Length: 559
Image: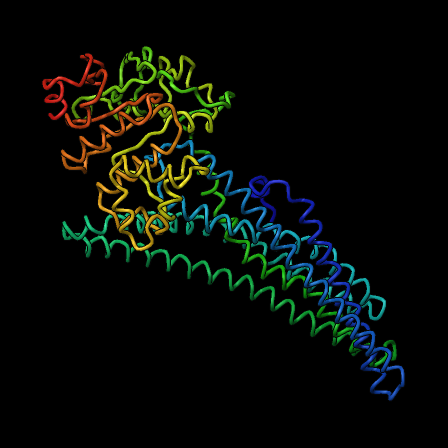
């Protein structure tokens, strides 16, 4: 079954498919040559003919050639498969990078990017080349058998068509049921990931058993769908196998009938038997590869869904150089509304001069997080402009922007890498001395030295061996290592005690005068070194001032 959308997703693989098909045809030709010489050798041995030895030598040579072709075929298929997987996964992940996190399901995305793409690999490197082989080889074998026994050739032709075409009648049904099963698989994967991430919360509320029963019910539904689908698949496979066996038997009977009439030598009956097997070998392999590539056919909806997800921003910036240090950052008449709601920010205008530290305060829901997302261009304003160094933020390429603005959130992401590699996320060339200075400024150096291998310690997933405050300080140190001229710190000290918070933020404020720092906070300790402040309420700037925020504005933020 050819699927145009799958071929589009795989990219340009026609040359690779043709090369793999050519190797498959060559292998089948060698099988046919082996069958002809094997039949001749059997006849010579039965007759006691001395020609058996040269024929056995030819058989050994053909067997060696077959082994060499197989040795070339498998690595080539693997290389093509790797190329298809890497290219498609890169395309999927590049697209996902522009899709808001709230619109992505981790489990469903993982199922599509991993299992779905693996299925496409088998479809392109196994099924498609074998389809070309099936279209050519059985025809050639039938014509060859016709030179021995036309009646046997006629039987093989009919049986081969039945073996190839009859199972295909059920393919559409299988794919339709398979797509339904794939949706169930994606949903189950998403719910499993959600449950695993929420285990402490589920235990706290005593909901573990209830969620476990729900997952078990979903898993049983998936198992039932899979088994029903397998039954239909086995019926189709059985039909093809039956045609193969009956066709081979009838072809041999036709050859025996010709031999009894003197139209065929007895030894040639053996050749017809062996050639009948080679006629059906490509068909058998096609059925096997169909099941291997079937996952790609069923996952096409999931792949399309990922690629059709609407990016929050259109990455069309051409400016490749990062903003100079120091750089100002500003919002001019900026308005943004979350889709389908009135929530967001309205007509926000504020400017942070180069090298200054500015605090953004406000009650929960006032628009601070939306403002942070606008500053890092996770979203684009519906009206107004975000300026970086007096240049529209949208004109920067993604790489230039990430080198210009670094955002640290209150729940930072840490990778299962070494501490040293985590600190070098924004600057791979940072020296150990620079890492240590940043860690000391964030008051995390002593904690890191106490780890089993110090800075070489590989963190658990998301830094699970660190406390919330330690994770925040490590993320602050990582941002300090970067050379980004603008730092945006979003509640980065929420898990710190007041004393540590004041010391860390004092160090951040004094870390190089060439940085512009935006601090989003509720507490006075985080804003004590601000040069100016803005207060948000209801998505608007309602107050502003110089120096640290006033106690009144912080009281409003605490509300």
